[in-house]
Length: 386
Image (cartoon, rainbow, N blue to C red; front, side, top):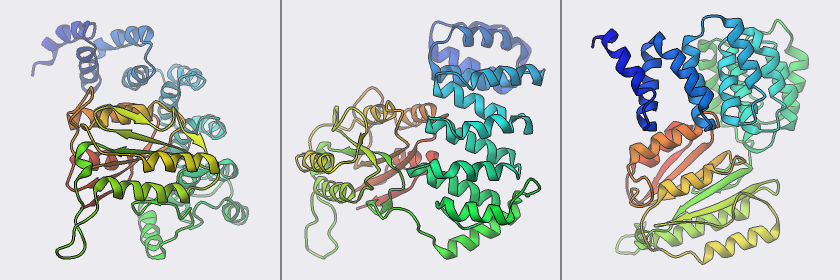
């Protein structure tokens, strides 16, 4: 392709009325490093009101920044942005500027928004500065649920120590071994420690499970397919015997998981067929009454209609408190605003770019690429059940 001849039409596309055209043009301009597009991107950023799109444009603008001091000052201002997507995108960009970002990132470990704490944690891991380990350990005791897991995993990758999600031994170890001259593990050293950890099979989290997948989170949403095909039978383990209806298996596993949730948990259930039907408007705090109400809701579920996976995921991502989602489905998307699996994957990736919600998926009765994608893209677990 003749790049100079593409510049003028590309700049026109950046101002197109169709948002999809503008997005595609901006992405191409960033990938190709077309300097003439920088001014247009700045204008788009200034006019944009959508936090998610502002975060995307911010990442694109990073490609065209020449003066690092000016860019860093701009990012430092955006750390206080009220929109989490913008704030977290700025955090990620700061981490790429080197050790001068260390004070800001360590301070953000105490932010009230878990997604921003996680962005700061990832940024500190990227910087790989030994003294930041002590700052992470200091903020560890205030974490709960999935964030305890994230802190423990990050510290393991940086130090190779096997203390899991328990802040107390981490603190004691750092007091003995830590200091400003501490060195973060190299990739080769980490690989060895990962192999050693796998043999130990540490399991220091809650015993709560959904279809055998451990529930480490205390801010979890269960998305359950109740479409017509969920009335079909599962395969029996015994010859010439019938399995149970898929919907009954789902209800059984969900009821069991609800009964195992930690009392510090917050949770919700979102069912979907042709439409989306949540149990609650957003995640609610654990109480005996809430658990019983959720179990009653579960017991009354029946199977009918299409498969509006997109609508269910969109509803779940609408709750900013959620950090983990479980999706159970027995079919490809067939209802809702978007049914194409690739398009759904792309939308979820956009929503999750600066949130890092983990999605675990369970496929019943078949192989569904969208479920495998969702788990792979977010660091979750995918399993199949016949």
